[in-house]
Length: 217
Ligand SMILES: C[S@@+](CC[C@H](N)C(=O)[O-])C[C@H]1O[C@@H](n2cnc3c(N)ncnc32)[C@H](O)[C@@H]1O
Image (cartoon, rainbow, N blue to C red; front, top):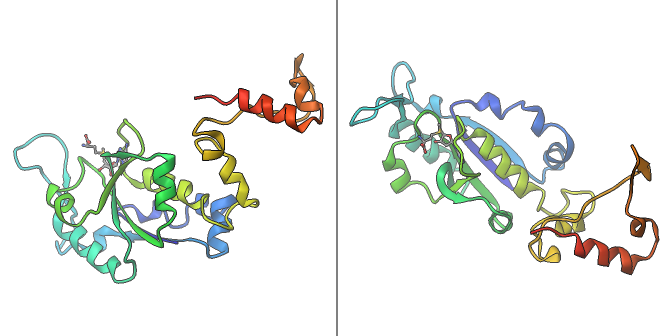
C-alpha cells in the first residue's frame, strides 16, 4: 500500500524514526507499504513560497490557500490514484471498522492541514473523505496521518509476525467488538500481586472462559 502525505512539514515524516523501526519500519523494509511525504510549499506559485493567507471576514490565524494544495494534489495523483483524505477534526472519527475499510485500498493521499485549516473550496472539490482522530484539536494533520498509517498498516497481511494477532485485538469480531482481556507475564507474584490462578492452570477451556468474561466494553 502506498501512502502519499501532503504537508508543509515533510521533515516530520521523512526520516522520522517511527517509520524506521519496529513493525512499521519492517513493513516499509519488506515493501508492504511505502510512505512518501510531499512538501506543499514546493508547489506554491508565490514568489516567497507562501502557502497561507489571512481569512476573509477577519479573525485569528491563517488559512492554507487553494493554489499550492490544488497543484500538489494534482501532481501526486499522477502516481497515486487512491482517495484524497483530509485529516481534520470535522471528519468522521477513525474507528476500527473504518481502519479495516481503508486497509482494503491500494493507495491513499493524506492531506495535513496547519494553522486554522484549509480553504473551504479545497474541501468542496478535491477531497474525497475527511477523517478525524478524535474530538480534540492538534496543531497539524501530520500526527493524525501517522496514526492512520499505523492503524491501517497493522491490518495488512505480512505486517505482524503472526497475521492472526490483529484478528484478536480489541474491537475485532473475535472479541465481539469489545476491548481485550487483561494480560500478565512473569513473575507470578510481583509486589504481592498474583497472576489469576486460572491463567496458570493449563486448562485452555477455562482460560478462554476467563478471558471472555474479562472483555470490556
Ligand atoms: C489547529 S488545527 C485547525 C483546527 C480548526 N481551526 C478547527 O477549529 O477545527 C490544524 C490542522 O490540524 C489537523 N488536525 C487537528 N486536529 C485534528 C484531529 N482531531 N483529527 C485530524 N486532524 C486534526 C487538521 O489537518 C487541521 O487542519
